[in-house]
Amino acid sequence: MAGFEIGWFLMLIVGGLAGWLAGKFMDVRFGVLMNIIIGIVGAAIASAVFRRFGVFVEGDWLGYLITSFVGACILLFVVKLVRR
Image 1 (cartoon, one colour):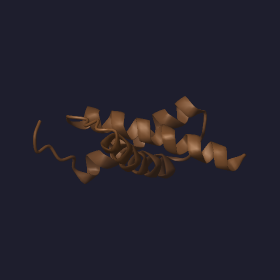
Image 2: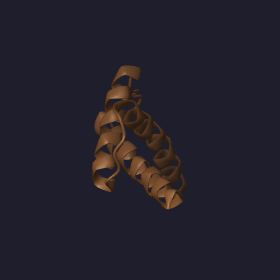
Image 3: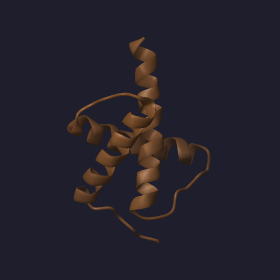
Image 4: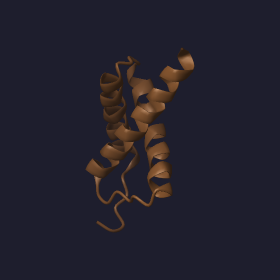
């Protein structure tokens, strides 16, 4: 899907879902706003990591969800390490 751009509203929804899923997966609890922030920041982190290793996620909202989820898990893992 060349040229697909996710809108800001869908980005908030998918980012919140990714943050919530990552919180459940990593056993970390945050509020709705923090889930959205974690999902969006996670997407940026995962994009940078994936690009560094030559992995490009094609797609639509599902690709963005997977990327956000992986990045949010990385972010929450680092947060758990720092909080110790």
